[in-house]
Length: 443
Image (cartoon, rainbow, N blue to C red; front, side, top):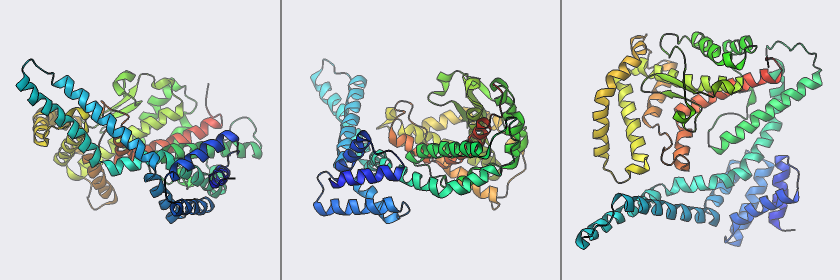
C-alpha cells in the first residue's frame, strides 16, 4: 500500500467519512499531485506534517508546512501559468477591439506598440499579485485536506458544550411532545448545519470563531423578535422583522424606514444590498420566497452596513466619510479590468468631478446621522468606527466585468465591513433556522 493511500485513508477517517474506493481515489490523487516532482526528503517531511496535523489539527507548524508545500506544488504552478496566459489573451483581445489596424502601415506600427502595452500591463499586473494568486490557487487543495479535518475535530470538541447551550435556550417548546432523544437529534442536525456553513466560510478565508459554537447565540432582544414573529407567513415576516429590528437597535429615523424591493437582475449575484451613497437597503423581488431564516440573515447583514456607516459619520463626521467613499471608488476603478493602464490621476479627476454632484445627495441621505449625537472616538463604539472607516476606504467589490476573479472575491470577503455583516447575518440565520427546525412556524 503506497504512502499516499495510507494518508488518504487517514484523512477520510479524520473527516468522519466512509472510506470508499471513489473517495480514496480522489484524496490520493490530490496528495500525489502535491508531492509530484518534489525531492524525496521533501515528500517525507510533507507526509510527516500531514500525520501530525491529522492527530492534532491545532499543530500550527504542521499546518504551515502543509500550506507551503501546496503553494509550491506543480499543480498550483500549472494553474498559475494557465491563468497568466488567459489574462494576456484577454488583454490582447481587448487591445485588438479597442485599436483596429488601418490602411496606413506607419500608423499600424504605432497601433501594434499600443496593443503590446496591453499585454505587458496584463502580465505585469498578474505578476504583481503573484503571491496572493499563488495562495488563492492553493486554497481549494489546502481546504480539501485541512478544513474537513479541523471541522471534524472541532465538532467533536464543541458538541457537548454546544448541545448543552442549545438546550438551555429560552425557547417555548412546540405543541407536539418531543422526547429528549428527539431534541438531541434536532440539536445535532443544527450543529452539523452550522459546521457546514463554517466549511463554506472557511474556504473563503473568513475568520469567524465557529469552532466555539456557543458564541453563535444572539442577544436576547433579537431572539425575542424571532420568537414573537415566527408564526407570520413568509410574505409578512421580512417587513415585520426589519421594523422590529430597527426599533430594537435604536436606529429608527436614521436608517431606511423600510427596505426597497428591486428586480433580481439589479443586484447581480447578490440577494440584497446596502447603498453607501444613498442610504438605501435593497432586497430582491424574490425575497418573500426565501425561508424566514434567509430573510432574517439578509436583513441583519445589510442593516449592519448601515450601523457601520452611522458609526463612522457620528464619530468622524460626514467629510471623513466622503473621503473614504472616494478612496473606495478609486480602488474599485483601478481594479476594474476595463481601466488597466489608465493613469491614477485621470481616474481621481473623474471621481472628483462625479462627487461635486454626489456630495449634496449623500449629505441629504445621511442627514439624520449627521445631526445625531456624536460618538466619542475613544469609546468602544468609536474605536470600532475607526476600523469601519479604514475598511470602507479599502473596500473592493468584485469586478462586475470579471465577478468570479478569485483575487477580487478574496478581497471582498476579507474586508472588515463584510466580516462584521456576515457574522451578524449568520448569527441571526442560525437562531431563526433553529426555531424553524423546532416547527415553531406556520406553513
